[in-house]
Picture 1 (cartoon, rainbow over the protein chains, first blue to last red):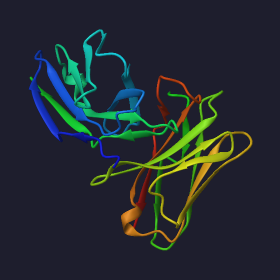
Picture 2: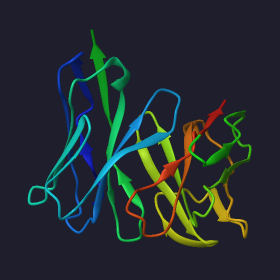
Picture 3: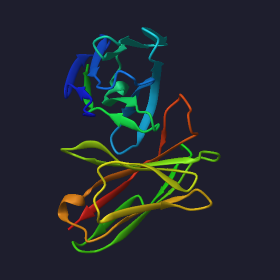
Picture 4: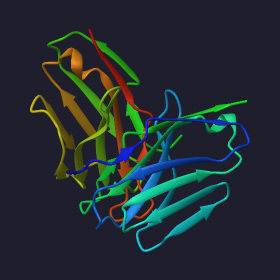
Amino acid sequence: GEDVEQSLFLSVREGDSSVINCTYTDSSSTYLYWYKQEPGAGLQLLTYIFSNMDMKQDQRLTVLLNKKDKHLSLRIADTQTGDSAIYFCAEKMDTDKLIFGTGTRLQVFP
Amino acid sequence: DSGVTQTPKHLITATGQRVTLRCSPRSGDLSVYWYQQSLDQGLQFLIQYYNGEERAKGNILERFSAQQFPDLHSELNLSSLELGDSALYFCASQKMGASYGYTFGSGTRLTVV
């Protein structure tokens, strides 16, 4: 099937690190993505990783990919209240369509 | 502004009616994708167009149809609307084969009453 799984909620204290996890289905996916959706807005691309990479770092964001387990994670360092949003992982299929996960709602409290 | 324009932003209509949602992709992007986001279903892929041709179809109902015009804008037509069709409808565009993923519009919120 084409189910991409994520946990629904994550709550962290401001300044701590957040780790959002994702399990995808297609081992032949070439690219995997993380998107952020703030209330009332569309999805904003945060970062992506090519399937032959294990890790990618981009400022406060670190993406880890375990291709054997089809597991993707997004770590946000020094989480801020402005990071509160829904985070979606997505895998790219052969027709270039993206299959999105269920989304993880991140809540950051002071 | 992402460069992907969706109109209208909000739409309220009655059951049984028909509506048209419009999307203008980013300049130069040939691919257009439509997604439906509802509270309990997450983000569901509906349909993909590339340079005017349908390329992939997801869980799109027969009551729904779409097309991409020669100027690359796309329209999603929803007919015989039901309460369960209430959702956010997103359009996204991409240059074919690009690694950097889609650019999303801000969506059309459809409410069926």
